[in-house]
Amino acid sequence: MPSATKRHSETGAGPSATAVPDRLSHAKNFANELNESRLWKIKISYQRRNTARARAKKADLVHQHKPFLHSTGPKTAEGKARAAGNATKHGHFGREWCEFYALLSAQRLFVRATALEAEIRCSPARDMIDLRPMLLDELLRRLRDKLAAAGVENPALDARILARQGGNFSDADLITGGQAPLPAEVVETIQKMADRRAAGEPVSRILGEREFWGLSFKVTKDTLDPRPDTETLVAAALRAAGEMRAGEEQGLAAIAGGPSLRILDLGTGTGCIAISLLTELPGATAVVVDLNPGALSVARENALRHGVAGRMEFRCGSWLDPLRADESFDLIVSNPPYIPESDVESLAVEVRNHDPLMALAGGKDGLDPYKIILKDLKKHLVCGGRALFEIGKGQEKDLARLVEDSMMTRIDSHTDLGGIVRVVEMGCGEK
Image (cartoon, helix red, strand yellow):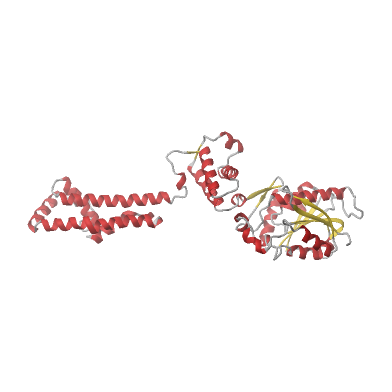
């Protein structure tokens, strides 16, 4: 008897019982306790208190009413329970069998209810389940609270961005449509995006897009996530191009923005620097270099998106290696890896876990890429041209020393919005 009843309790749990082992284990233990205590004792008591003759008489009555016609079989726990129920309706079974049937039914319902609860608790939108459609205002509030609890720096802003993208809302919808009910599938999609953000994934990685210099750029696992600090490099390069356009330096080989202006972007990644410059300088052309073929593929997609692919050439290789010995450029820009290896682990989780390491770590002191580039940079910069590099905080003096050792001339430094020196500008003048 205990084994048969146990089989029934496990069958009643259903396939979803494996979702939450601790809850279902509790339900099974509860069922087993009933089997080993009250259910078993009731059956033994019934058998002992009824003689064979009495049992035969009751069996004959049950057979006359045919209580097993709609059961799964009298030899199974379910069959016995169904038979007991049918016989009880006709008043032929005693109190013991009534209690047995009631306890067996309670056991089955408890296990099934526990399985259903487990299935709900494991649902992807478990904290969004409600009998009524969720309103946009309520969704934004829940997203904001979730992100704030996870330590996200700007939870309200990120919540609005994720909701706008996941639900295909406009800014006007977010402002005026707060009481609009949302379909369940939209809520689930946005909730999944919020879960990824709460786990430390940047918004740009979730959306697959990043805005830079007023343009939208595709980002992938192969590329560095463009950041506002790098816009300082674009602004400084455009300022240098303006000075070159004015022809202030003798021996200038090209007029900025003219048909012969050539730009070189080293370590292009998404291509955001070169593409931004080409959108501002309609007559210029650019050669972009990256060691990662996947990054070059993304840069090509972004160039096509912004209509400048016809003025760009994509080369795969390490820094200056893909260039011909006689190639020279009027403007060279680069945002190389400049994080010291010892500092990588201390970076924010959004950077450390989602940006490619090869685009972050710049060697023991963070200066290895500059040393490699500056060694031959002068060969590829026209007389009167400009080279501009993004640098890390506190690296200005070290880079100035490297510029001097390479027989280049440091022209200027440019600070970002935080007042930190972010870009060093140099020319090819003699030491």
